[in-house]
Length: 355
Ligand code: DAH
Image 1 (cartoon, rainbow, N blue to C red):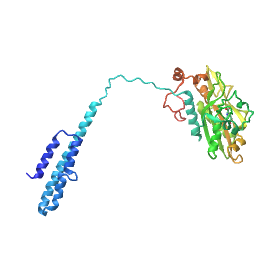
Image 2: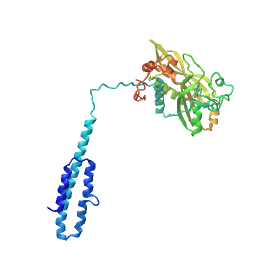
Image 3: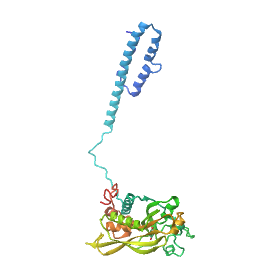
Image 4: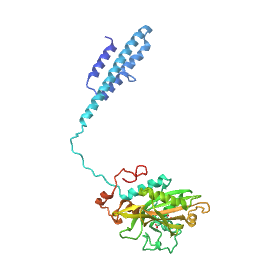
């Protein structure tokens, strides 16, 4: 038997042994590596006569193919063996009792914020945010609120320093200022968030939530404001018709200013929106005052628009029949289980805001 055949038999025998991937790899390198046995035999071909070369080359190729086939089969066998071993070791015992888990609930305030954001997003509003700690300038001065305005009183506002330079924002309106200072018109945004006032009873908590709206462009008028609010209220309360009235009012940062009431009645202890002859105030609004636009470097002779601000907690109480605002913030798990919403049930106008 020629040397090369002996080598072949020797390696075929080795490959029958119980090997792992490393063992097979070693054999592969021994045979076909740069200085491998078979590789070297191929190199030797150059130095033998042409007739002889053909024969030897043929034999060599056959041996090479045979060895390579056995090697790749061996690798496959090891692969299967390892997978089976893994499956055996990682067996799942489906008879074990399940682990207990608690599913949390989405707080009604978060749910209502998602609903509001979804409704306004669909009519082209972007969502903006501002910090809870605000400068006196953004909260009052830039919003055309004079020094002697009652909202600036120590009893109404939580100031953070004696100089009254910083405070907990009393409304979301300063986000109007922040938005207009950082970008160029047009603006079409809503800004939901926490707000603070020194106030506490059944319908007031020191911390509560508002959502601000702002739409500034070249020819935005009060008709757009009415249309927008009408659309929002219908979508939010999921009713086809509503009764809405604008009452003249005063806010330093709008001119003219109005408060908006919606009509309702109580039937079997439940609030029905859009029926009856009772009125409920739900928001303040108006056309943004030219002084505010000047303060944020927007030219009031070219741009104008409306703004509004409403209480999120209040909207949630109305929609979901919750009658004590304080319960919102008492973190009572039983309350949250009752009034909360299932996670991942993200509200949208298409899928139904509330279920
Ligand atoms: N910031 C006002 C408040 O908290 C609400 C408000 C009224 C906001 C009129 C506005 C507006 O943007 O135009 O009482």
